[in-house]
Every structure is written in C-alpha cells, then in structure tokens.
View 1 (cartoon, rainbow, N blue to C red):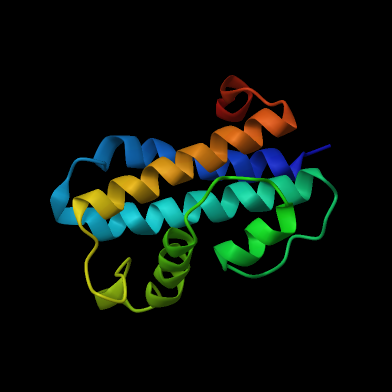
View 2 (spheres, rainbow, N blue to C red; view 1 turned 180 degrees about the vertical axis):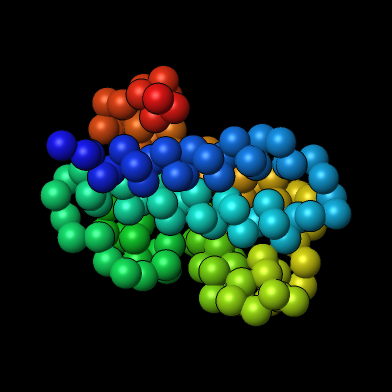
Length: 135
C-alpha cells in the first residue's frame, strides 16, 4: 500500500533539494521564498496524513501549524509572511513576493531555514529517516 505521507515528504524534500542549490542566488529570492512555503506546506500535510487526519485543501501555514500541534518555535511574523507567498504566487509577476516586494536574501534564507527545521522536526516525530524520504 502506498503511504501517501511519504509522498508528501518526498515532494517537500524535492523543494528543499532545489533550495539547497539556489539559496545563495540573490536574483531569485522570490523563488526561494515560494519554494520554502511549499516545503513547509507539504511537510505539514505529510504529518496530518501520517496521523490519519484529513488533509485540508488549504495552503495557509498558520492553520496547518495549528492543526499539527507541534512546536516549531516559529516567529508569528515569519508565518504570516509565508502565508502571503502562496496567495500572491497565483500571479506570475508577483510569484513569491511579500507585501513589501521582493524578499531580501536574508528573508529568503530565514524562510529556507524554517522550512528545513519543520521538515527535520516532522521526520523526527514520524521516525522517518532522510534516506527513506529519498528512496
């Protein structure tokens, strides 16, 4: 039987692999921010799936974090900014932009580190290794 939560984790890991390759490119901080949001969203949905909860058809990171009830030591402002990325990304000219415009390289790196932290924490709680995710 296919374990859907592992597919969610694999998809999130793909975003993180891409981010590893582009994290220092200041010209595409909007894409770094967008893929960070996607990695967080997919990771949280993996957790819900693994726990047998219905995965909501939403993209709001704060709502997903509230549903998983895990402590990620997040900054509420960072979560609010991540939440704006998905909504705005529906328009090509705005993809991955924050309310104040294109993310700085510092913003992008902060989103990336948060995404990695969420992924690592969920894998730890689900007792799944990185190798299992990459298979």
